[in-house]
Amino acid sequence: MAYKKRFWIVLVALIGIPVLVLLASIGIYRFNFTNADIYMELADGEVVQYDDLMREIEEHGYSKVMLSLFSIRTKEDLNIQLPDQPAESPVWVPLRNIDSQATHRSAVGDYTLGEERGSVALSYDTIQPLNPGNDKQKADNQPTLFIAPFSVSDQGTGLFYYLGLFEQDNQKMSVQHRDSFLLGNRVNIVSIQPDNQGRSVMVEYMERNTDSNAGFTPQEAVSVTVNVATDPVRFIPAQHQ
Image (cartoon, rainbow, N blue to C red; front, side, top):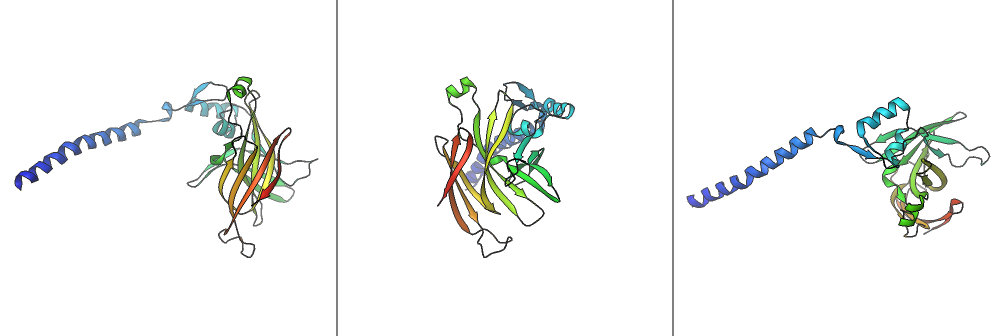
């Protein structure tokens, strides 16, 4: 029994010591990993060191949102067209800040409309490309379409969620908001799934019961399919399921 006991002690030591050394080396490596080791490839193919890029943002006034989300170096903000406004007098909300939380990350911006003040938040963790780019598209440098949910809040109890349709043009170094589709008030988005051709999008979300107040957890499951047109770029009336 003493022999077996000594055998297991030696075996654990032989296995444990290398593991501890490996863990220690990983810890040291992570401790020494800094922003100086981070590089970003921009939309035009240029590779820039992270700290240098952050200095350029401060010195030249580049859009932090456009760099963070699309790797585009530009002074033009990502603008969201506020829904439900007259077509002849659209209201554009510039997204200029990044809000990183444990559950989600968003590009955010504020707006003032008369006496009303509100904010817009675009969830960039759930951005989905509609036409990810085949070889011909890349060769022709054609714009790409993508969708992303965003919310609009005002001074009241409303927090309205929309599905946004966007067009990214790497030649012009721009991203344009083309259309919006209303999902609902205080909904909880479960999934966003474009089809393989990029012609339609299915959104699944939880919608609060109409008999409950805004503070209650959403209860009703809703599935909606939104069709996408490309000439011009827009959403087509959807089908609820």
